[in-house]
Image 1 (cartoon, rainbow, N blue to C red):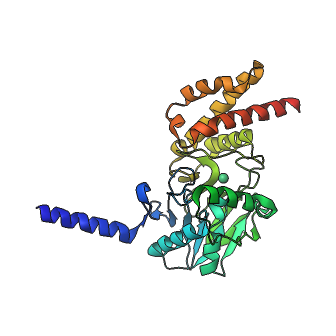
Image 2: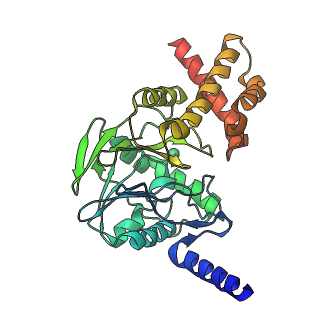
Image 3: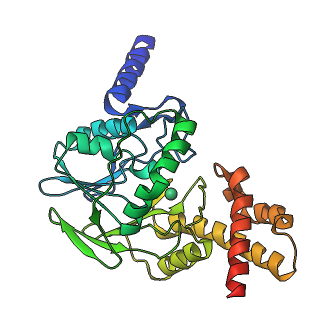
Length: 321
Ligand SMILES: [Zn+2]
């Protein structure tokens, strides 16, 4: 009996190393098919980039077309990109024909260079603002951030910038697959696209939604704009699957709901501070108490106060208009 168990453990261990990418204590990562659709996603660890996760923490995805694959956000550096390609090939040997990047942050698109190396004919798409801002310094800024945190950026330069533009309301057909593009003027950044995949009825949200972790809101972002975008989706979204930039995919309520609740709670207490002519940070404890388990998300401790201050300033600016 003992021998059988150890043999089974050996086989299980062998199979796990053979069939998935092992990332230390974070476990094994592989592409999972979303139901019976032609959409495959590898959900990365929902946390900040660090040395142990090697800078892999987003949700690379691909859609299998008739002749090739369409990839969304292949990852945050060249080496991670090579791993992602290995994992894709375990599922499909078709070539990558296109890559869509959701926004300018390097943790989503620096792996473009690994895709371009293997598939030189692949087309790279993004919003024109993304291409412009990435080239104007955002790529270098993110290279610095990710190199400092993960130390795993070797090979990621020269950057493979997207060079095909996608604008708000555009429909595009790639290898028989249909995509509708939405660009909120200002939400997570001012460079985002949300990608609707028609055949599977999936909505790729980029970082306009995160779950189990928080990220930064930079100077191009709008928390009020992000709230408005997500309220529209909660009201009108009829998708079978919602894919956040970080954290697990799922149905609307469980995927979009918690992040919208987080942002609206910030807005509520920032508004109260503004109306009472108080400093926003006196309400930090109230926010945390009201958020319950959301306050346990990765990076909450050092992001929430900044986000509360940011939405306070946005409320102030709006009032000055
Ligand atoms: Zn982002």
